[in-house]
Length: 169
Ligand code: MG
Ligand code: FE
Image 1 (tube, rainbow, N blue to C red):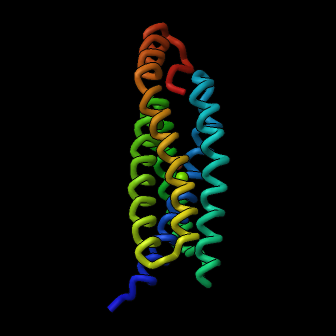
Image 2 (image 1 turned 180 degrees about the vertical axis):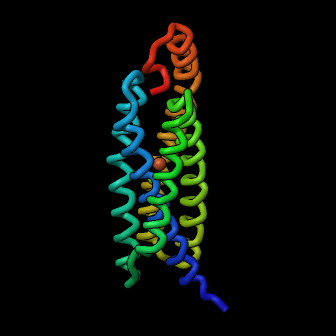
């Protein structure tokens, strides 16, 4: 039998590892992108938000007398590294990255909705508030990516057709 509190702690650790994965992924994208300055800027901004999100989660765990899982965090970083390397060898790295980022934001949104419900169910209101703050930033990033996907796509296609060697990133 597992107590609800243990599930909340486990999901907070999963979310912390998810943000570590996001940090690695966004750091790689921000350093690789050259021909898409608006995308690069937005990713850089979300990278800073992501670091603060991880810190908020760490504080949630600390407030519950717990700490993040080093093993889960390492797994998250490993996943992000593998994904970034996959993109580098693709001829459309910026598009692969955009798709991965958008999908990742949706997973973050779902994770925080689960965490908010669990925290409220347990009366852990500080945890719920922290997760709501993170959720708003994920929604904003997902909306930005969704609204810029068509433009990035057109830009990529035009650059690639013109033979721009940096079209892919
Ligand atoms: Mg995040
Ligand atoms: Fe995010």
